[in-house]
Length: 290
Image 1 (cartoon, rainbow, N blue to C red):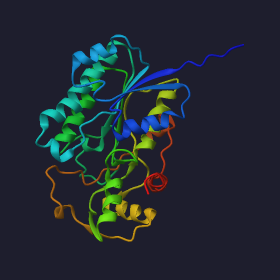
Image 2 (image 1 turned 180 degrees about the vertical axis):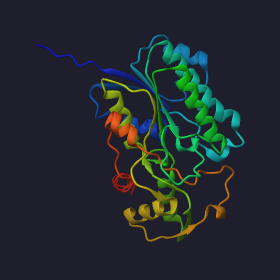
Image 3 (image 1 turned 30 degrees about the vertical axis):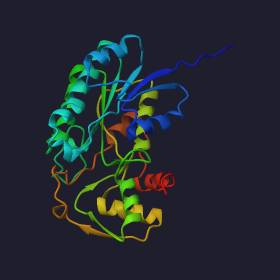
Image 4 (image 1 turned 45 degrees about the vertical axis):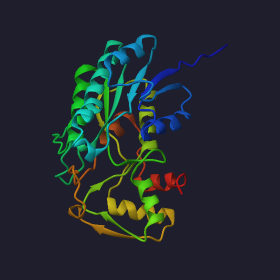
């Protein structure tokens, strides 16, 4: 007797970003999921007509939006582009997926909060973004939830990986270029390995029953950017001197949330996803970077 495995066909937008590439890497471990990856050149999600044309002859069981405008400081001057990518494009994707009755997973950020309270944020907490990036990401969440009832929002924070540009890769480069570094010590969060987030996304897709709405996902534990840099130094075997400084020593165009911890209780209880500790995950990832 032959057994046929029903494959779930998934579209991943933002294929060239670090999360898109991380989903590609992790998807090799999911035999019942077939992923289709669309770069910006293959699918311009800011163009509704192009999206409609793209979906005309394709059927997907899920759409996962990994595309985003993430240049936080640049967004302050490039508000129109940030809104187009982080909000309007999400509205377009939510509408087309709703029209075709496809569940939609959209990745958001801790920047929807102001970071003024020193406690892990719940999905139900009052949002209050303090910069253009956070404002446009929150608008994207609202567009998604309002246009497709089968939407899952995943809020994450401090994402890094072996792919694309991120804090870990910048630190490793600077370790080789400088004798000492100063890193901000008064912003608290939890570094998130994009491969762990990608695994959480694929684990959710693998479930037979879905719960829609907003979920938090970042690695467990907490640290400052300075402590994060110290661990990168320790695990990479660098001898560089790293000094802690206040955010005021490095003025940026966009304000950052001072406290970015996210409470992961909901996603662990509903989807039973694995949430590794940030230090363990960093140590594993550095094996691919050092």
